Image 1 (cartoon, rainbow, N blue to C red):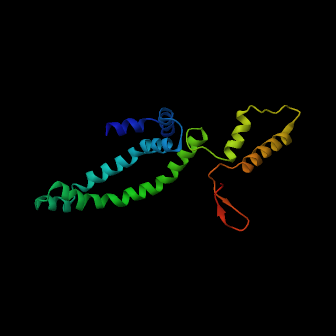
Image 2 (cartoon, one colour; image 1 turned 90 degrees about the vertical axis):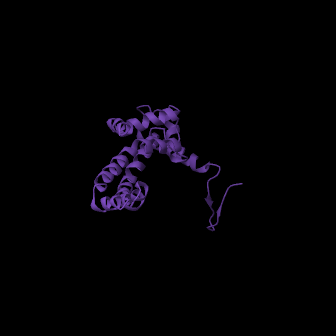
Image 3 (spheres, rainbow, N blue to C red; image 1 turned 180 degrees about the vertical axis):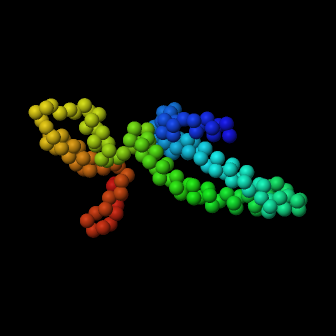
Length: 170
């Protein structure tokens, strides 16, 4: 439980950024980081439920009848854990998706293939606007970048023809 306390002492997203920075960018590493940072919630939930269930009458009765600890765990305690853990997990999925999206936004998670890289390329290449160009030039430049990204799709992307038949590029 000390490791859980240590992990909960740090802000969620900062610890995830530190882990991904150590592992390297990528979707897999972002998922590993969000899992490592998110496990203390489930650890505390399971611990609390086990502590409350182990003193209940049906567990004491099974122990009085001479059931081994493993049988008590499998038959009496684990079924009490399933519902709360599933509910906590389903409520936490959105937060994990947002954390992965945040890491991707920072360039540490999933790599955007089209629009994100097109817009990122415009800014990465250092294209700036002079005061006399205004917003129309920026809009035109961004539109050109997006159109260029859609004209040159990633190699293994699925394409749908006008007839509705999906094909993979040769």
